[in-house]
Image 1 (tube, rainbow, N blue to C red):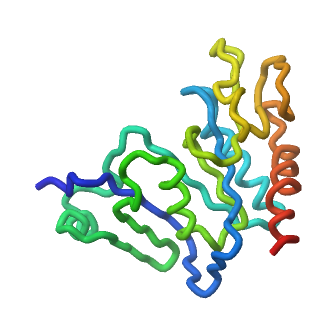
Image 2 (image 1 turned 90 degrees about the horizontal axis):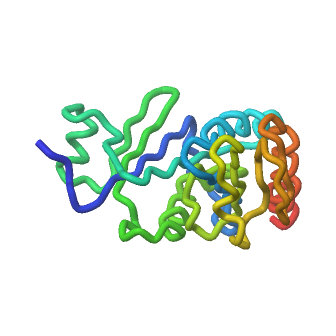
Length: 199
């Protein structure tokens, strides 16, 4: 039995779902971590999230999957719910909620798709995204000297910083691969605290 083929599903995982805390007047800041394959984007996200959590911020993450894929196990009850045609399926336990739903913008508009995901993460202080380099949100690019590539987003006016082990001359702040605490400070000062003051 195959799942629905008309749209690839998206998944939202949260440890808490607080309907009454959603404030859609001010959009949660979105920061995309971008770069070539194997540059270390996931590693940077893994290091950055705890640094932001230490500061007391609620952090949501989104991972862009370029080639789609199943998020659920074929044959399981929740998979069967989605395969039956449900537009959204929520599986809940005492400590975790998983939602699988069809994307609102399946046609390939990455900016629109990412924007539509923010409703599920509106109670976060910041959303760290891995990928979505075509979307029009602030970007931090990871550049590794061993890959012999310069920044892929160098001419993107949304590039706000570069994380690298190379000696690069770029018009944005540069952080070392292990300089995650200072990068978290940069994000907090430039995006999270500004949002708190303006809200």
